[in-house]
Length: 78
Image 1 (cartoon, rainbow, N blue to C red):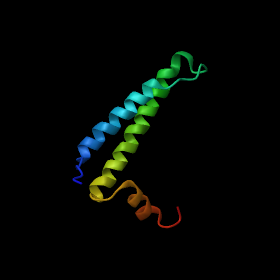
Image 2: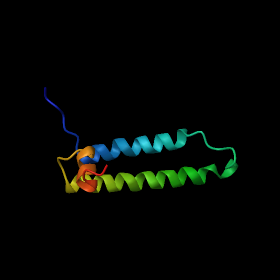
Image 3: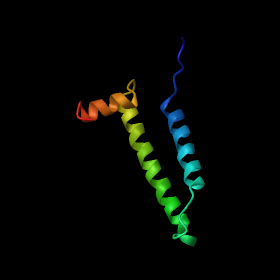
């Protein structure tokens, strides 16, 4: 079976769109009221930060999956 390969920029685009879309679809707490947009902005910023870190790992270890990256980082502990 021929498996396709996704470039890191395609992973970034897919994950970025997922984070952005899911951040706006969240059922926000009624306690936030009119200031709910602040939590959406913070969630987007944190999501982009996580994506950036994951892309750096993908560039450093190009043929390694997420599970293998966890194994490299944490060893057999996890």
